[in-house]
Length: 140
Image 1 (tube, rainbow, N blue to C red):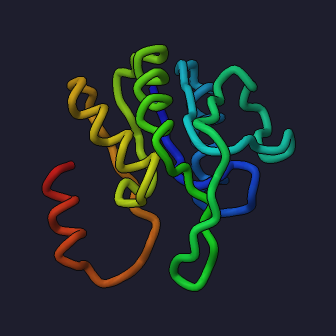
Image 2 (cartoon, rainbow, N blue to C red):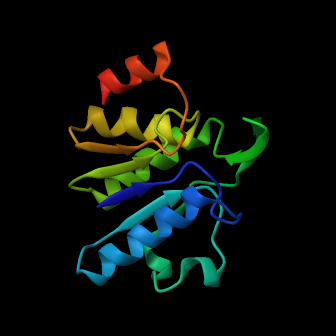
């Protein structure tokens, strides 16, 4: 199973904590799990999750958004690194957190769909639905 977190695992955040916690619980239940995200978590944040279950797609780039600063994986290397990870991991299913986020999350959805990998999405933001949300939802 593949999990994608669009936010740098080296920083604090609820999405990062949920992604790492979910991955750790799935491993405890006997699943083979790999997490792709920018950055690297601290040992405390990683918890019981083995280091081998984590793959960094590169450093996070600070992007101001929604009154905060999100550290996202952006740039021309992201599609190549994501495709390489998908080939290496060959997940039966891909769980993408915040799939509408620019960079890694949206790239992972697109590449997984091309490969016929089912995609499960978790949207963490609470906001009124927009036209973009409806279009993205229709593609998932």
